[in-house]
Image 1 (tube, rainbow, N blue to C red):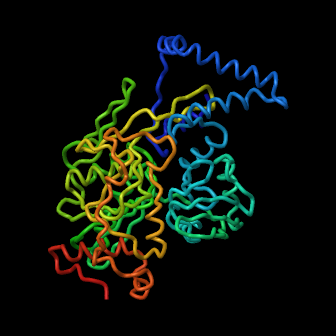
Image 2: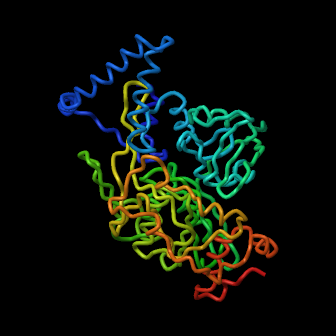
Image 3: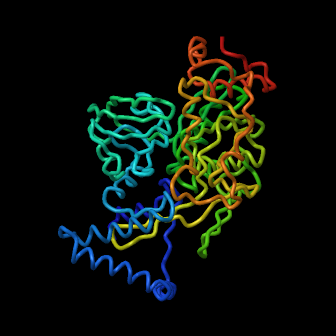
Amino acid sequence: MPKKFIALLQSAALVTTVALIPTATASMAQVEGRAGPEFSKLFATYQRIKASYVEDVDDEKLVRGAIDGMLASLDPHSAYIDGAAMQRLNTLIDGNYSGLGLSVVMEDGAVKVISPFRGSPAEEAGIKAGDFITHLDGDLIYGGELDDAVARMRGQAGTSIQLTIFRAGRDEPLEVDVTRGVIELEPVTHSLETGNIGVISVNEFSADVGRDVFQAWDAIQTEAAGRVNGLILDLRSNPGGSLDEAVALSDLFLDKGRIVSQRGRARGETLLYDAETVFRGDMAEGTPVIVLIDAGSASASEIVAGALQDHRRALVMGDRSFGKGSVQSLLPLGRDAALKLTTARYYTPSGHSVQEGGIKPDITVPQLSDPDYALRSKYATRESDLRGHLINELGLKDEELEGDKVDDPRFKLTAEELEEQGVEDFQLHYALETLRRTTASSVALRDD
């Protein structure tokens, strides 16, 4: 087996937790016995195509189509991984590439944006979570392969590509020219704001994120030259990553109790993750913490937000998260291919399944600085919108998760009015103001 493929399977720096699951010969034999009549239909279809289709069809194409069809019938996250898809996963491990900086999925034949990476060319061009990309340089990509679209969006830094975008609430499509850049996947950034309020942004859960956040906190303390009066952990537009790193990050703030549980059907897929297993103690003990989330916060982000919320270690602000509560594992198939298969669900310390419903913030704070917020939030894309998604075991519907619609007097300003006041990120601004109002130290003064 090639070394690079082995490294990929062993790495935790993916959009999911990684496990290698051996397949028992006896269980395979049982499956063959039960599914014999169905397999005969599959083989008969293959024979009919080979004998009667108008053109000669390659065996590899037919087999790959059958595999893709089986996995697509399960859920949006299970897939066959080889070739270009394997290269995309390797990119996540390597940490940089040239392109636009987008996290995308295929939904009903369309390329849908989960979130742009922070500071990426896509974000700077104004591409938003929930946008549909229908054309690249004027060529229709609807109904095509996701890997083909991703390959076209990547390219040499400095070159440009035109994206045609359909955005919920807009009557006309948008045509956006984006200049490709080197996308350095910097997972953790930090800053110290007025009043000794620290901000740590986690952009993805790749390798060593827990350690990087610990180092960011250490740097904030050094820069503050005194007491840090509050900390904001920003998980917005973070599509997820390694389960192990989500556990490590949560463990930085917890000194006891459950962080997350993983429950699956197969033996070995039910796992419990507790505090004090990665880091000792609460690194920010006594410091108020706010976690920011939005509709682009998924998977590992929801694990962290749910753990800190359930243990009442942090106040969660922003918008309801994406709602991806499933775990995918990589199962090797031969020398250079694997199945990415959904093998378990995960649950917060209180036993809440994140699947579909997501994490509901303690305080819902709209992103008023985004002029398209109202329209985009109305049609926001979440796990429950994806075709074939796993169903929440409680059977909750989206409307049952919505709060009241009474206008909040705190959130009346328009994007234009906020811009005049110099507020570029209202959710972050509101979190900072909250910490400045609630901190016991008089040092936490407002910006002039």
